[in-house]
Every structure is written in structure tokens, then in C-alpha cells.
Amino acid sequence: LVEIMIVVAIIGLLAAIGIPSFQKARSNSRVKACMNNLRMIESGLEQHMMLNNDTTADMDDAIVFIKGGLPKCAASGTYSILAANTAGELAASCTAHGTIAAQSADVN
Image (cartoon, rainbow, N blue to C red):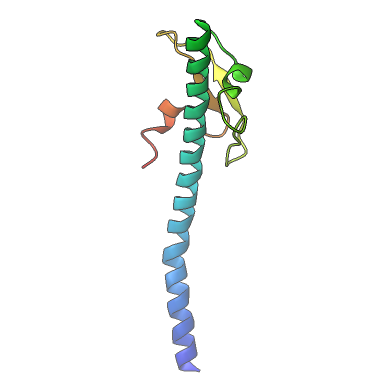
């Protein structure tokens, strides 16, 4: 009985160490997947603007250049296009994770 209690205690200790690390890795992978989706959307925007010699684009224009259509956010966020910044560049944003620039320093 004592041996079984020791084994259960060891398993509990390993679980207490492993579960938070697993949850952090899962969260980081969701953010990284979302950032990759934002990069694809922004790339589609740039391709549309270069191909049509245009300075504006919307989500429908970007989707044409993304194989498989609009990607889904792992955290159930929705993607949108932000207004052009001072350099005239369009940026994609996610309601769950924000923009690439906002998340690049936080994800390791």
C-alpha cells in the first residue's frame, strides 16, 4: 500500500510539473499559427496591390491569393484589415491576438 502511495505521489508531482508547460506550449502554438495566418493574409494583400497596381485592398482581394481560402484562427478570433499606416501599408489583425507587430515580441 505504501509503494502504491509513493507511485501515485510521483505521478502527481510529474503532472504538476508537466501540465503548466504543456498549456504554455499549446497557447504559444495557437498564437504562432494565428501570426502565420496574418502573414498569409498580408501577403495576399500585397500580391493583389502589386498585380493591380493599386494602393488599397480588402479581405476578399487577399483571399484570392490564399490557397484554401480564409484561414481560421486557432483561438476562434476573426481576421480583419486595418487602415493603412503612415507608410501606406495595410495590416491584418485578429480579434484574439492583435497584429503581427504587437505579438512578435511576446512569442518565443
